[in-house]
Image (cartoon, rainbow, N blue to C red; front, side, top):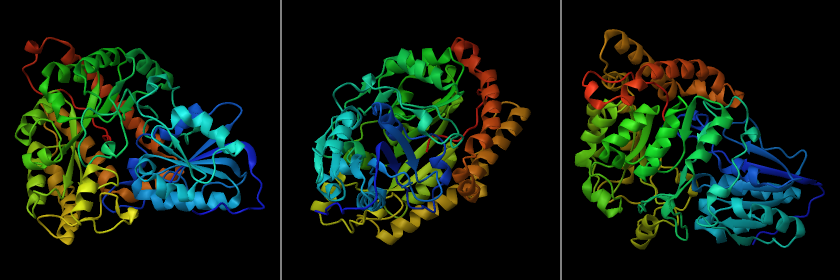
Length: 500
């Protein structure tokens, strides 16, 4: 185990620094994804930090330069995702050499605590928020040292008892909206490839009281809300209650849901009436066999067309997420997927190479079969092939993934997916907004790489948010009336970048 080197640097007592390490640059992804909404992991820890500790948050994806060392913090907490684990360890080793005490947490740490503890005074396995005050005191007193393992829990106590995340520690102006909200936690699914299936992780589906969710939204005071839940509408009854409350606030909102939301037309209608602008859906694959092998229990691909049409009918945009490289995927999977997206006119889509995160059933199965090609975690970013596919070569999979992005966001396919409307004026307005958003979000990434470190995201997007809120107000009343009165054309669609 790496020991902490004695340093002549002196730490400032009572100062805590929380770090979100940088992701390696992905040529197929936009820098804007870091600036749409804030991650709440570190603001939640900041909220759980007791007085008189002073806390600062540094997100390398939003900042220029190295995390600060002056004044040198007494405690440094670093969140660890598999794709940036090496960067997290590099930062941890650096701060330990300088004299800070370092604690690591996150799903990668939960999966591989023995690896992580080589770089820390303590590691937290499981939920960290509820044990955070004890971790701070344990590090200060020396009870936690030498890579001590602290066991948290995702199940108890109920996370709804936690204080709201502290958004005041985030860089102001850096996000499209600061109103990222968690209403539910966990997932009712346990798909074999998902990080929520990590060995040792238990994440039961939990729901916050709707009144508490609304109170938090009110406290932020923004008109565009992004729910960062894994599956907001897993409980339709809760979803109906939440939508009823949101409808009283006249907001725009988006969320991640499963395709199962389309089982309930009343729920979709209630979502539209409450201001739902778009949904992010893990469609994953067009193969029943792939879904079955990964134990994803949702509507089958044969129902995707009907489900997407229902959402579009209610003015709700769809950002479909697809994974390439399942065992039933051959070299034709890329063209078939693009054809489906264009035919269904999905407003946005994201692609991922199947990535077996350590600790998941998928990783363990591929490892047992001898198909894992590398344990270089920097390549576990869903943009590189780290295992041997069943029906194509690694090179075919990686090249097909990149080709799919180029094809989908070519101007010809962007134009082919432009939204339909019931009037010429609306067609022009919505089409223009769609083209502008697509260009900014997916084609002109160089602009974002300049704006994000400058904290200009909110200033750039705010006028569009206000315009789209006004447009949404014109249409949402359509879904608050009896369905029989609305056989005519589609609702005015609000155009904003969806959750990525």
